[in-house]
Image (tube, rainbow, N blue to C red; front, top):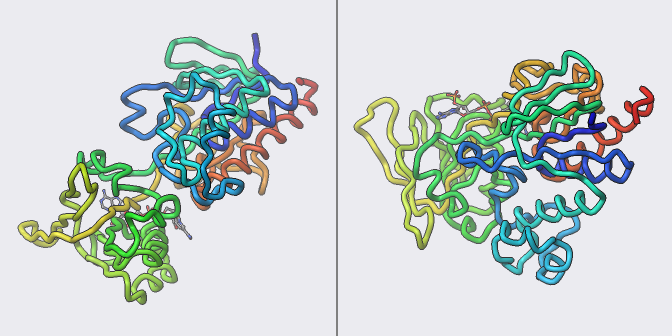
Length: 350
Ligand code: NAP
């Protein structure tokens, strides 16, 4: 059987593409990712980056409130075990993703819990091979595999994820544990400037720890940081260890000088934000789609989701190194679905 639409990825972009293409009777197949230790380590488990956050306060339509009965009523019982207990304060990342998945399923979306490991998009129908060894044929493909935050790779980063370690200030910065407390941001690029400027609104003090004596960030964003009295740059320094306890999460961060590696300093901090870049999840494409110099997929028509291969569309963070928000990913998922639907119709392939 040749699929009409295969959606690769299961973040907000993937499920929104699925909701739209399912409602257009295209019977989409979502390949949501495999549950493997490698994916856990890399932060690429099914349902994407939002599963690594707690409350999602900025996704429109979910103001704070106790959603228990709505979640119980709308999400299939078999999926509840994937959701942490409801905190009663608003929607959490895992809950939001289960809702999106459920909504796509309600319209007949089929789901394969597997990774696409390789594709052949040099001829049509496209061929996709998954980790379990099966091969699929597809008339159109929506790539919505997202991006993953880069971390330094310290075991203590892993230990304190969701307990003070984050790579998304916009997602997590306003949480109570980060308010009126000192925080640490690592990195010297625009992301680190943006994250630290944002966090300075809530924190008592933000340390930006950068490994060199000059920032990589654009002048305007760097100036904003250097002029902010609540931000202190720790030049020529790397993160040595994130310190804390199981009960309190992160309590301090030890940094080490890159000029004299015998010099360390312990910074009191209730949070640590990695801002050392993201990596789009495109390995399986093996260079078959055009990307920018940063590795993100290119939309070949401005404001449309077409890629360099006709019939292959891209949505969400895999094609966006700029906004990187759940709502923008969902929006571009809708765009990709409509683009795919219209392309199939124009080709007489529906
Ligand atoms: P980036 O520009 O690649 O900067 C990454 C920073 O992390 C660099 O300062 C780098 O240090 C540091 N870094 C990388 N690996 C490290 C390691 N292992 N240990 C310590 N430090 C490390 O990434 P980005 O800041 O995420 O920006 C990515 C792109 O998005 C850029 O084009 C940026 O302009 C854009 N962006 C724009 C905005 C905006 O305009 N609002 C906001 C965010 C991002 P070195 O400098 O020493 O290499």
